[in-house]
Every structure is written in C-alpha cells, then in structure tokens.
Length: 426
Image (cartoon, rainbow, N blue to C red; front, side, top):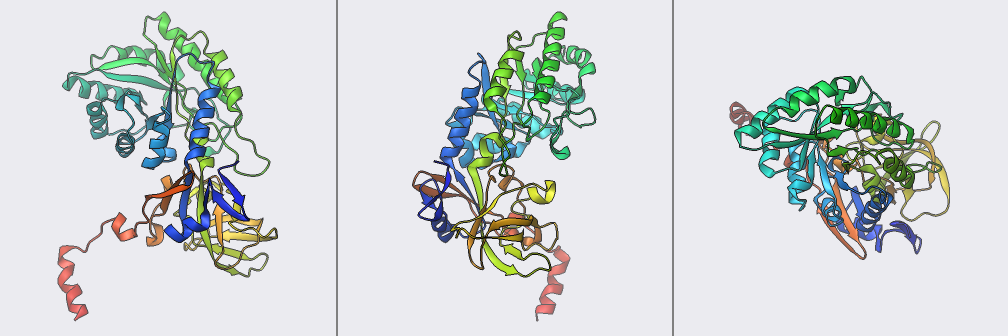
C-alpha cells in the first residue's frame, strides 16, 4: 500500500488520517512517512548488491529534519553535508561523524575546523586553495584530514539548468584535465590524506547515460592517478537520481543504475560512496494545506490555499510540478489555478490544471514534497515557518514546530529609536 492512500474516502499517511493531523497541528504542514523513507533507503541499497564495497550517505540538503535523519541513520545511512549547520543536524540526529562527508563549494575556515574537530569521515575538496587551507588547519591540530578531490567531468546531466552541476561552466569541482597535477600537489601536503575522487553532476536525473559518461571519465582518472603512484581507495559517485512528480513520469531506474555502476567500476578496486537525497525523501512527504477561497477568474477560477511559496519554493524557483489532491476527493474535478497568499504572482503551484474539485475550507495536499520542501522554507511575507510531522504506523508526532517569523529572525529597534517609539505611544 502506498504511504499516502485513501481509506474510507479520506487521505491517510500510513494509518493516520490527514484530517487528524490537521486538527492537531494546523496547516500548512509537511507530513513524512517513516515507512516510505525506510522502503526507499532499502531499495537503493538493494540495487547496489553488485557493488562489493560501498557507503551510503543521505544528502542532508534534501531534508535536514532531525527525525528524518534518525530514521535513515537507523538504516545505516550516513550524511552528505554542505554546511556547518547541516553538520550540526547530522550529529544531533545520531549519525556518526566518521560516516559524514563534507561537500560544498564554499566551506569556511570555521566550518572546516568544526569538521576536523568532529572527526568527519572525509572532505570533498572543490578547488586547490580549499585543500591547502584544510591541510594547514589539520596540521595545526596534529591531524591529517581525509579528503577526496571533486572532479567536474564536463557532462551535462540533461536536467533543469539550476540543478545541473557537472558542466564545464558549473562552479563545482575542478576540470578533469587539471586533476592529475592538482592531485599530486595536494597529496604532498602533510596535513592532507588525499585518497580518492568525487563527482556529482546534478539532481532529478532519470536518464542514466550522463551518469555513466561521468563515471567512465572518473575511471580513466583513477587509472591515470595510480599510474603516477597515487593512492586511490575511495570514489564518491554522488547522488542525483530523480523521481516521478507527475502522472506518466517515471522514477529513475535504480536497479539498472546499480547494474551500470557495478559494470563501470568493476576494475576500480575502491570503496564507492553514494549520496542519494531526493530519491529517498521526495515521495515520503506531502505538504498539507487548506483551501482559503475559490476566487472566480477570467479564464479559470483561482484556488487560494494557505500554503505559499515560502513553504514550498520549488514551483516558483523551477516551475516544478507537484500533484494537488483533495484529502476527501469527491470524484469530481475542475480546471483551476492553484495559488498561495504571498504577494507575488510567482506564488503559483499549478496553472490551469485539472484538479480535484475543492471548496472553501477543504483540506488538500501537494504530493512528492519530502525533498527540498521544508528544507527551502522561509518566513517571507513574515509568515510562520512551516510545521513538520512524522508518521510511523498509527503514531504521529510534530518534529518541527510552526514558528512565528519574529521568533525565527530576532529583530530589534536600534537603541536610539526607543525613546521616539515611547513618545509616539504616549
């Protein structure tokens, strides 16, 4: 049975009705299925049975909720992080430091120090100067920092331009033709334990051909590095496998992916690292919302819901598709544009789409919202930060409170304004 399903005419998350959750938590709210997270994590691992040595790390940027990370830690997933804040999340969720890899193009010195002091498993270096800084910081602490060099293979992932990271004009990684010389220079630094390569070419990838092309380029570099006498014992193949967001769209074929990886890497003799994010979390979450108004429009009515672009930014950022459904569908439909209350035309979730017929006060949901949903939420328009709920069987719990904007960002008047404010009040 799907994690989100109709039971008695009402949408449920596992065994808990969404109406029950709305009564308890209010709307909008993200709802996650623990069982769906486990199932996706297990499916990804099973697809890699042909890879003899591997480590799996969840990409925390997809969903940094502590309870979500704990579910995946219990599945023996580590963490791929891109900031000091994500490091804190991973550690607080109970993920072992040596099962964390620090990626990202703009790590600061304090973040590198925090990673060194925590004892992270490895750092993925994005450029030579970063490696030099990490080596110096490690040497000051009498350590050697475990590191991989991220390669930009010059491969287009053929996905949305804003989430493509492997082309030659991308800010990520170092050009493949510079990697041999750079690897040699970095490997010679006393504070650095450089022992492999990393690659990641983008997100929401369903065509495996670009991934295979990138991996074959990495294999060539592995062989070239060893010919020069360098140690290469780990290769991080990143993540990026896509999922279905709309009817007729298919998930990435993870089983075929696993067979491709096993074939391409069969003579590498390394431990492979993987960093799935969206593939694990996207379909494990929905955004629950309530219809505020159904406003007549010149061509189609506007269904105005209480969720907004600050809660789910993907449609505004990428024109991303999220299926909209009633919590109690009647079987009838209408063509409408679904929008939020934020004061921007970009606060639009669906344009002239056939949706379940809904009316004022009805509960509804946006599907496939477990990745890059709450993670990208903000308090724009001084709206509260969205709440999050985890469901596990017949249990549910709030795992992130709804927080008023003034509590998220502590603001104050300048000291010289206080007297003037009091004067006006008088």
